[in-house]
Length: 153
Image 1 (cartoon, rainbow, N blue to C red):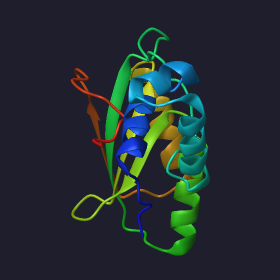
Image 2: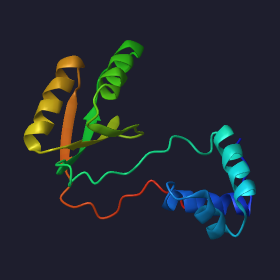
Image 3: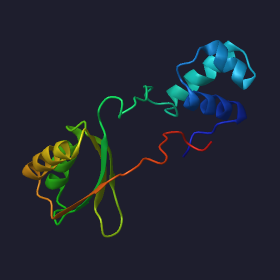
Image 4: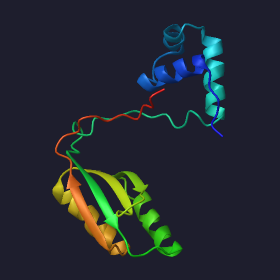
């Protein structure tokens, strides 16, 4: 069952998604409340697991990560041991920003951020050396049009 939030919780979450690094004073002012009630609500939302890890969003291109590949994976393996090894391999690679198991013709899709095509090939060669994969299709993103982690509250 989903955690129930009220309108004030929703306002707080929207503001935190915009900038979680701002001061409690600024946040309280933005939602029309005072610091203590806002802090108590944030703590409640964290305790309930609604608010998870807090981090910063880095500019990948400024740091030299100029290529994003979407990797479509088909596998003929569906045993528990293969899945364990596959997930372990993905979790060990920081290049993999997202991994999803899909319904349909494609079994998995990965979002892989690397410096260039050569770095993608190094990633690809390492992955296929660790786990048997039936078919891999890599799609290079030419332009990121929209990217957000914010939920539409």
